[in-house]
Image (cartoon, rainbow, N blue to C red; front, side, top):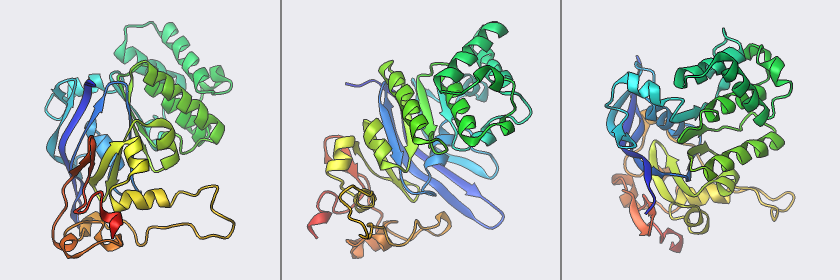
Length: 327
């Protein structure tokens, strides 16, 4: 049996503004085992990033609030333990690669200062050794003229370089779990390949990774298991083979159909999912995918489907999961 590193149970996160109260993450549960890469996929606005930030209690409060749930990391509930203990876990045992690097890097400190400080917070290491370690990691993520960039401020670097620096800072402490939120969005394909190779090497060293992405091609290349999220809920989970070979929720099927392939002839229209993700302030009753689903029937409009087994380690939140394509 695989060893569970992180176990998330019934996580619910809400936001309250002057005009509205809404749930951004609704009763989400999943596990991550040691040495595996788990993909979290879905359209923008479905709750992927909020879920990730909640694991390390990085949701700003107010307006955000973790209403319910458990986040067990090596048996300790990060939602219940003291914030000082959580800060010790952040960066050392669990690292996060943020979607917007400029908002995660301090604009008032040079790159080298930030990297050295990160190392010295978690390790008893001299400044000179920490500086050398930082230089080595900038080289690993292919930062040109790394010694020069150590003296630069974040605003003096391109978005792609900022992202690579964030990746170096996340990986250099050899964490047990890396949460990567769209880690290669600002990078060209060559640097993307190099970054993913670094992630593969960490996986070989038994590092676990939660990879948040909307790119199903990246999921195919990198992941062992996949969580599909829609309108703040997990609607399907399974192995990569389950998801790509036998998608059992209409939303997952539609996501896969919308991927361009080499067989798509010139001038052919790509498959699309009609409509858009509903606003969390105004979710429909019943199944939240019902208005976009070609297989919806009356029960879908009145009852919320629960995740049910389709096969071993494969579940989907659909009343006809595994059979909807018979309609």
